[in-house]
Image (tube, rainbow, N blue to C red):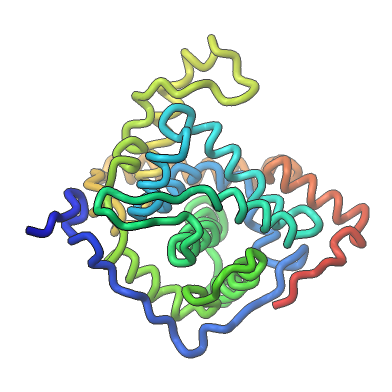
Length: 306
């Protein structure tokens, strides 16, 4: 008898292989003139950090890897911080290939055997590609919900930049693509064939009830009072911005009242961002990189060609 995944209803090993289009090899330059540079460090992206993490962790291999190799369940804020900083360094610091190698090599020891007896590795190109796609999908989503939605032309450019970004890792291009048609078909494929709810996504849905340690720099007494409301709002925003396919697979509920409240919230975020000084519109590491380029553009001579 074949055991089925209790959340997704799929049989283990039943994932189909995505076939990309013949015109997949489309790329565009990264660097200070790119859309990735312009949008990846937008501070509003922090509002959907939980969403991005949940999308990644709907992949069964990532769920298994987190359960066996990560402190995500005991200190998720630390895990997010350690993950985000080196990835932003790839875009906003000089020597992107060196920073990419650092990110890639973090994942080398993350491997094992899953509950079905199948070997897994975090650097399996199919697995790593999914996490990579969620990063530039998050750029699109951030602007869709809280900024100025990208045009179709901009989306195509961003996907093409995503292939250049991937090539920094020096990994197999078997799952990779830079054309928007492949991106859209891949997105549907992942919902239909691969992703599902699991132990990690269940934890994320209830993270506001967990005794999560205080983020760096936040006094413990302050965090004890703020933890539940802050984390509850984070879960609510993740639900608000989740693709409908994800909500369905995860069994998350969303009401008309929730949607009306979210419309007020997102408009407030947009207005606040527009009024804020430019340096406060970006994450500190991203803003530092922008200023470094303004003062010394020669530091970024190691261009990333498309």
